[in-house]
Length: 73
Image 1: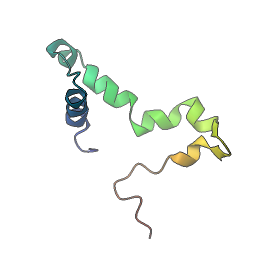
Image 2: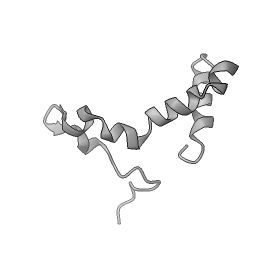
Image 3: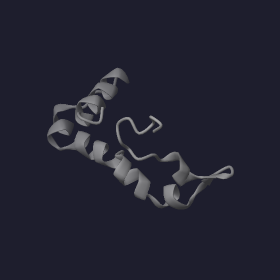
Image 4: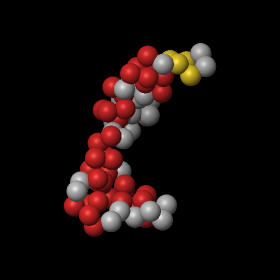
């Protein structure tokens, strides 16, 4: 998914039965969605840096965004 995000966004839209039109593809809508949903963008949003969910800070839910970062050393 990390290597070919655009393809996965398109597949997800098709699965949800809302495929992108040719115009949307040529206008860069898929790339914009991919950028907006990227880890780099989401971790910089103010609610994700300062907010809380119950007793846990929201920033706790973000990992390193690296493939395999879940594997303990």
